[in-house]
Length: 298
Image (cartoon, rainbow, N blue to C red):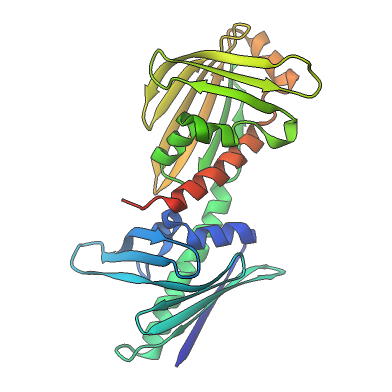
């Protein structure tokens, strides 16, 4: 017998899909009651790929692996999988008031139809609450310029601190998100000696300038995966401090530029040099979400 449960999630389709398929997200919503949780999740999201979620009672009294093989993956539309001798399909259907997530699965004989429906519905309801809570706190950059010499930008990211920190300190990853795509800049070179006392140098080119622009400085503090502090030595610029605070598998990043004077801070804002932060952070969110999905959770 087939059983169907569904919910409506008021969030963009891409965010709903990501939360359903990201191990970091799965670990936060995949439980039918408050006394159970998912301690580990792995996802190989492709036809023939395997998935597994370790589900345990919080008191440690019992647990089991919910695992299977994907039999169909149509991005942003449908996921089908086999688990044991049973099958399930998950459909993502955009409607006027949100995304309908509909799960249809084969029943099993050891529990009543009502128990199975209620359990799967509870998990799906947790999923909807998780996504909508993230919409309320993630994706928005909060800017604070109330201090005369500081400019602070804060955003929450859907990944553990170690992964977000890696995206800031691995040159290959850093180059994938640091430059806002809409600004027309090209990153020509990136050297980063990530250690206290180490130096960095970034060179950019813009179509409106014949000469490349260089940004450079040194690292005052490198504390993985919690804190980075560096100087911006071109023209006597600001000192930048970035903190990484993790909670429930997500990371709040606060980037503070401390300028030598209020006039220097105001000039930086007026020049537009701070205007690309929202786009930068959105690019970072895309990257760390992908990295989190590809990392096997500890």
